[in-house]
Image 1 (tube, helix red, strand yellow):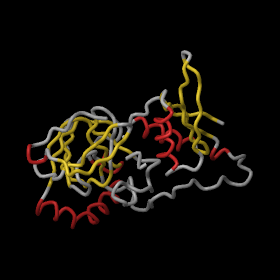
Image 2 (image 1 turned 180 degrees about the horizontal axis):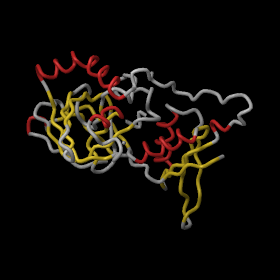
Image 3 (image 1 turned 90 degrees about the vertical axis):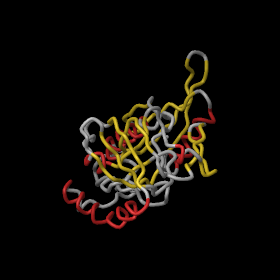
Length: 256
């Protein structure tokens, strides 16, 4: 959304990268400060990846997110910073550019695109132990110059060269299809505070047309839920997975 792009371990960075720029943003009641410089930045933790339903939507730097291209989301690095990501489980490394924010869940330090997750060998596992270090100076400029060519090579290798960025809305069901194309909803726990649920609704409404607020009484107190209607089964499953990686783990897919 980017529910991007979502709270995590403290950043382990060198002293040269410890100062923030003064710019900040708030997600789920927590404020994140953007680093003034990526110089010397290093960090270890868990990486995750995100694909649908964010494919085709805007990233934090205004680009269109394409899960079939190499990119990453980070909470505090300056946007467009290049980083080297090393999968500590298999020693594969990848140089990648940060163009989004996230993941906002404890212990996760970076979110990779689907293509990047496949390149670094963590697509099936979903999460991997990684180390990351910022790439700056001349090497970063070289990587930027090669980015389009590298993405073309990755797309050819992964068989995604012919896949275009998806539109924001699903196509209409075929005539006589009984409307089954969009007969699912996702129910997401919004917590006991209405303000928290409203923040989630505001974020989801940027991406989905049918977002509603509901409540149920649990142990004598109201508990709020956010509903996203008009989803395909695969879209609802993908949204559930993506929201879970961003701290909204209590959700379920319902047939309507």
